[in-house]
Image (cartoon, rainbow, N blue to C red; front, side):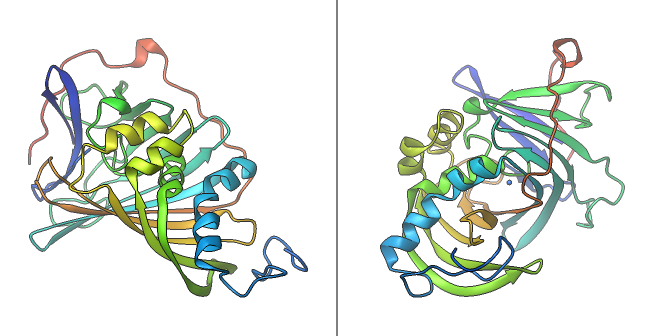
Length: 288
């Protein structure tokens, strides 16, 4: 379930280990908010510069939206073996906190079969996990400092923090417009491109910046390919980002993280665990 490794005297990785032996080194004018996507004075998709600016600004649009329901999916691919981890929950962008229930696959790769879901709380600078097994009491939380993780918790917890996923797009470049589509009945614009982790880290907010700075060390390249779907308000409806590990288990594994957002403005209440409920013992390694 969760593995803690130490490099240079600090915690450097936490992994959600699956039974396969594979581990993830461990989210207009003339129309309504659900109406057609359109701008007054530019062709569909706009210029390349306008498309890139729109993608870079998606994090700001989420802050204006305040909160949303979240669905996540994380797929690893190593040596032809694929493993999927899925999660659901909600996120408050004004406080940069969220709560997800993450379901791991069983040893045969079937999601959720025979495994206790992990509850995760995402907060600025920290990831809390409950029901993570490997010697931790069932009523206790494990707390991990995200800036201490080699990937800044972009993939460590089995789900990308939705605000971090959006802030990562602040480094977007080479953006191309792919056309209009519909997601859950909502018209969206599909963009494709790459983003640079280092550039995004410098442009990110104080809440996401430290995690993105940490993430620069965890992957083989700072360049992250993405597909993003924005509604007419510029809000992120779906983003798919692909990462390649420089370290971790196994080295060189690729991870695709997908975050889907809906129900903007839905109240999301996140209560951080009390100090007495946080496990202070040794973190045991999970059985493969």
